[in-house]
Amino acid sequence: MKQHSELELNKIQTILEYYKDSFMPLDQQTLITCLKEIQSEFNYIPMESYPGIILLFNTSPQIIKSIIHRIPSLIEEGGPHLVLMCSGDRCKDKGAFQFIHDVEEYLECKVGGLSKDGMFELRTQSCLRRCAMGKNLNIDTTAYTDMSLEKLKPIIESIRKNK
Image 1 (cartoon, rainbow, N blue to C red):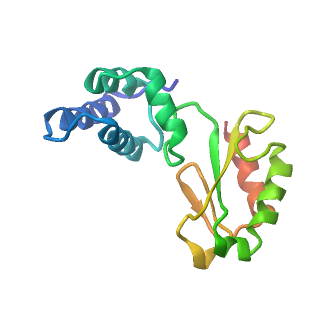
Image 2: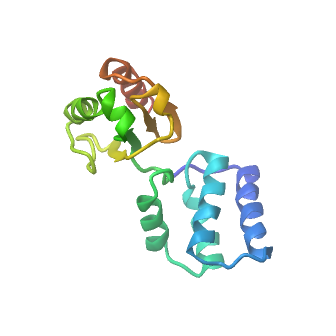
């Protein structure tokens, strides 16, 4: 777990105070919105934000983790990198299914699973809304277009080296 600076911790607190003082109900949808806002600051959900979220939303770490796992755009601190590939019709027409199969072989896991090294989780989504530029994928919050396995390999290896 990364130790965050005082400034970063204050950002988390400011976000949580906004939700505490707002007129929004403290329900699951508001919790999801709060998690997305925290992630927009850090590119993931810091573990240090959990205690404040738990108190504010009267929830548990397990609920937070299940929401993060259920929503592909949310990323947990220290979790595997999410490789989210488009399986929509337009990408399919551009060879997305073969590309998905090639990525499964390269990462040695099926869609819905983790790579052998545990660094990557492989998922698909029916549309990533960049149809004209397909085959599309996201790695965590970074979008990639017009992808091929040859373009993906150096990106994956760079992530592996920087871990």
